Image (cartoon, rainbow, N blue to C red; front, side, top):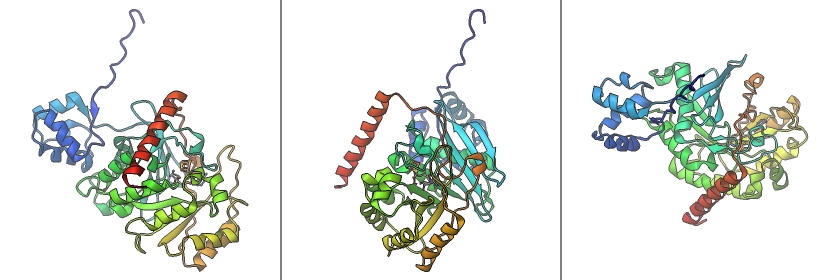
Length: 386
Ligand code: SAH
Ligand code: SF4
């Protein structure tokens, strides 16, 4: 174009989504407003789902104008929104920096579960997981994480509904990424999600799945104590080293101890063991018996996940008969062991199929990030005397 068209100015406004009540108070203080206004603002954001300051009618016009100038109440952009024949929905969300992550909604009879991502990509490389083939791009912020939930609430029409009437009733951190390699941001997000005066997702309705970052399990247990799910997938160190490589750092015995030490486990609050069924790899009767032995005495349920194939994975799903027999051994030992029905596999939304095209950062930056993460972990370990 002659003279060149001016590029649209980048949106420099600060997104308030993800800010806690204290942070909102601080924000308002910088605008010369009293802290108590933060409660009103918080309610508009997290109880009513407002995205426009003009809706916030109990705030003065001048405050609304000031807010609109420097701030926004954002939602992640939607690069794609697909619906499976079975009702499962998948969003590919796009954040302001262009990175993308997936979120899945799984409606069932009595509840609807949102599966959220905690990282773009994953630094771990579990051999059967599609996300594991995508390098870690970045951690998601608290705002990025609750943004997935808030946008899903928008699209499902859930704001303003009573608890009984909501479509989205449960959250699982089982999307892309290892939540306990992003613990601080995940804790901040869990606090926002669990606040009875805000997003109001009760603690029993929020489950965090980890591949077994042992030192972080105690920390999250103490800070917010979500329901715990462990990606076990193998009952010997030799096999788990291969399937879930973090096992080389935190082997099965240490993982089991960390679970035994997790706060508030009881029959009403059981840990879920996730176990992917890989034909001929981890699905024998002997594996099932060893699993029973390992979890003896821990209030547990076992979730058997038929392997969801993806291009080039090299694994096959165990046969239905094999899965049934494996489940029988667990049930005979007294464990509930539902077999997870693959949902949304026609849109690659089933467990372990999530992956975005966001590229990893340059090698140097990545090494720096990894070194920082490792240093932060070591610091924490030292702080808690591990
Ligand atoms: N990183 C965390 C949370 C996300 S994964 C974790 O590993 O626990 C959610 C669950 O899906 C995990 O148990 C994971 O091991 C499992 N999973 C990964 N790939 C899978 C696949 N192809 N088929 C079935 N389950 C898979
Ligand atoms: Fe990462 Fe979990 Fe996939 Fe392992 S199973 S690569 S920890 S997302």
